[in-house]
Structures are given as C-alpha cells and as structure tokens.
Image (cartoon, rainbow, N blue to C red; front, side):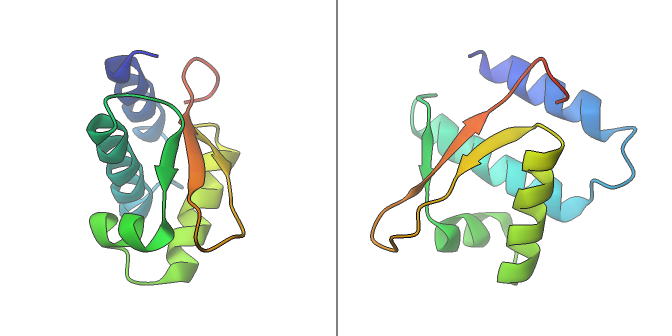
Length: 98
C-alpha cells in the first residue's frame, strides 16, 4: 500500500466532513507515524497508551470514540486485542471512503 495514497485519501475525505475533528486527525497521524516507523509494514501493532501519548489524547473515552469513528468512516480497519500484554492491529484503508 502506498503511504502517500493513504494520506491523500485521508485528507481528501476529512476536508468536507464536519464530524472529523482534531482528535481524529491527531490519532490518525500518530498511527501513520507508527506505520512509518514500522517501515510501512502492515498491520501496524499498537498499544493504546503509546498511541494516546503520541496523539496527545488524554482521555481513553476520546481515544476509543475517535478510533471507532475512523473505523466507521472507513479510514482504518482495527482489530483489538483483549490481552493487555499483546498489541492491537491497525490496517490503513484506501479507495473506499477514505
């Protein structure tokens, strides 16, 4: 998947969408940066605490709401992991909605 295409699709989608706010953008960019640091390999393995720190989101409720909405609009696919010792998986999506 082309990283530039992912970013282009995301920004093309969020410009007209009034429901996407700064927490969504910050969260998406934190995930995108983790993807970059992972040499663009998918899935991106994430821990909530690390992503919250990177995105400057202080509330777990805001984090989960923003994450859920990014999934709902089709910008990412998220596979949660209920085991705290393991990481959840994030996939970036292009070509559908985002």
